[in-house]
Image 1 (cartoon, rainbow, N blue to C red):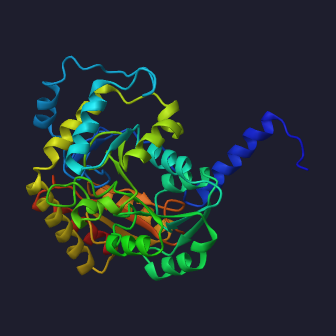
Image 2: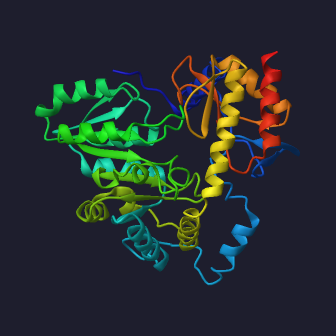
Length: 391
């Protein structure tokens, strides 16, 4: 039985834990910055911003923002209630109808990607079910799985032979089995093989849950994501589209069959117990979504910038993961990645070091988020800064 302690002991214990974080190179702090893209300002100094997920450069586009603001002069700012109370405002209905017309599936908007991932799985899975998740799925998905009563196993990252082994071993022992993956992985920048996932789902009579946080806006000729591009969307049971990256907004929408959507309205705790998004925020999401589909030139520029940067870094001998607009440059240990991040910052490049527990131990990295807003000269400036770090 643990020894009884008082509040003073609790705070001494906290100080010791904080000191351990310092010693292990895992200390984090909030830094105030004036957001901008391609450049941001921090403490009076301008930096090229490689830590934003603003893949299409929309959050800092003054003309784009001005066009939107001219249309929403009378739109309410606060919802002041959950969607099941008084917060289900007209922009919600308009946006969800717009999504259903576009995708051909019912849509449900949540307050954030985290709310969606922590609210959908606990509502749908329970004891007697099994969740098989890619080892590198986002923490919000893991939190959702752990909040459910289902059994849980991970398959090796993008290793579909391992996934099939787990399916063959376990399928007959469970009522329902869910396969869970991202389409583009946020910390490795690589892509799931959607055809393989759908094939395994069908052969083993499983259900499929996919998170498109980093592919909405960027993938497909119309920017509608990897599932739509691959022609498999109707075979995905739950598709989650967080809107805080390329869409430069907030919230997430979920696409699913009508019965599943209606069930979430009635059972998903973040949906029921959270204040709805501000109507003006939902209207902004709808505005971005309607324009995003015609942004093929921006998507082409994003692909060009990503390829140019990836090839240049690999040519210098850096270990660069992935095949997308997320470029993880792996340094290994915490000390090395923090030193590299500081060297880049000294050259006017803002690139955040990513360490354990966000990534596995020994896999510390600088995660470069590329944007269509970068010019060719700015890509060369980034490469020159990394070349200096190599010396």
